Each structure stands twice: as structure tokens, then as C-alpha cells.
Amino acid sequence: MIEVANLVKKFRDLVAVDGIRFKVEQGEVLGFLGPNGAGKTTTMRILTGALPASSGDVTIAGFDVFEKPLEVKKRVGYLPEVPPLYEDMDVAAYLIFVARIKGIHRKKIIEECARVARACGLPDVIGRRIGNLSKGFKQRIGLAQALLGDPEVLILDEPTIGLDPNQIVEIRALIKQLAEKHTVILSTHILPEVTQICSRVAIIHRGKIVADAAIEQLTSEDRSLEQTFHELTQQ
Ligand SMILES: Nc1ncnc2c1ncn2[C@@H]1O[C@H](COP(=O)(O)OP(=O)(O)O)[C@@H](O)[C@H]1O
Ligand SMILES: [Mg+2]
Image (cartoon, helix red, strand yellow):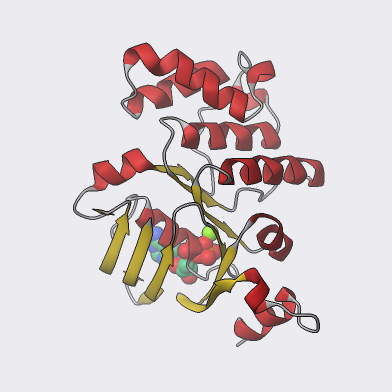
């Protein structure tokens, strides 16, 4: 479903993404795990077509991200690190606004907005001003906008960052549910998040993938994911 080969992104002298290569099969949930500054956000922005690469190849559902960005955008729902919300809008108006931008057919907009609102637990706040809602609800709205148009692939950048423990539990449960029907890449620097939600993990450190395996392969009875992660991301 997703294929990334020799991906490089330079910001002037800084090599933020340094020859990354990985594949995600349909239905897989890949955890993109790495310390701050490892290159997770940069890689995800490139995958969604939000940022050009310096070199390398990315295809999603068979479409080249750089040659067919519109085809890719139709198939990818993206939750950026900071959700692109308009605080002055109410939830319904915002979802309708995003649905229009995504080119969802006029006659389908209301039905589709209602569908994603239900999927993300938003019906009770649908008429509320976004700016007055909690961070947990804002994150749900961010997920809802990513789901508009029912994309096959979801790319979620640190979806639980800044949430309180209860909100974290709720959002993780919601992502787990979404993962049943989508191919997902989720970035995080929180190890339990990976073990709870993901089937596979790619550990990224200084722009390079230093491990890419099923979670069971990176752990054993006398070896935790924490230990593996710590060893691979030291220095
Ligand atoms: N637009 C940018 N301009 C310059 N440097 C950037 C830009 N975006 C990210 N970087 C740098 O690239 C590196 C990787 O950042 P990022 O992808 O945000 O890491 P992560 O999401 O893993 O924390 C960092 O050193 C960061 O400072
Ligand atoms: Mg980031």
C-alpha cells in the first residue's frame, strides 16, 4: 500500500531524512517510533504530499506522491502534529468546510460529515465552537477531518501528544478501531502507544531507520521494547 525508497530530505545543511526505506502492507498499522528531531514529521509530511523530498521515491496505493499528488491526497487522511482547526468555527461548519475542500460531492457532504462525527464521538459537540472544546475533543475533530472522504490510508502524527491520561486512553481506543479498516502510520515517541496500537514498528533515529520489524521480533522475555529502543537510539 505504501512504499518508500531512498527517501532524503535536506533543510540546507541538515539531513532530516537520510535514505529511508520501508513498506507498509494493506491493513498494517506501522508505529513510527523515534526521539524528538528524528525525522518522523518530515517523513510523514512528504508521504502526504505536504512537503517535497530532496530525492527518493514514495508510492501510495500505486500512485507516485510527486507525480500524482492529487490521487495520493484522495487516498490519504492526514492528522498533522497540530490539527488544522479553525477555533471560531463550530464543529459542523468546520467538517463541512473541509469536506468541500476535499471535493466531496455536494449531495454527500452532510451524510459524510455525520459519519465521521459519529465515528469520532462528536455528535454531542457538533454545534459547539471549536475554540471552546477540550484538547481531547480537538484531537477527535482532527481525526474526523482526516477521515472525511474515507481514505484507505491514515497518517497520524503524534495523535496523543498533549492529552491527559483519560483522553489518551480514549484516542488510542479510537485509533485501534480505525485501524481495523485502514492502513495506518502513526508516529510517537511513547513506547506503550506502539505496543498497544501497532502491529509493526519502525524505529527512526537521526533520519535513518535503525529497526523495522513486528513488535514481537524486537522484544523477548528478557528484553523489553524500551531496552531495544534505548540501545538503537543512543549516541
Ligand atoms: N522546515 C524545516 N526547516 C528546517 N529544519 C527543519 C524543518 N522541519 C524540520 N526540521 C529539522 O529536521 C529534523 C527532523 O525534524 P522532525 O521531522 O520534525 O522530527 P520529529 O518529528 O521526529 O521530531 C529536526 O532537526 C528539525 O529541526
Ligand atoms: Mg514530529
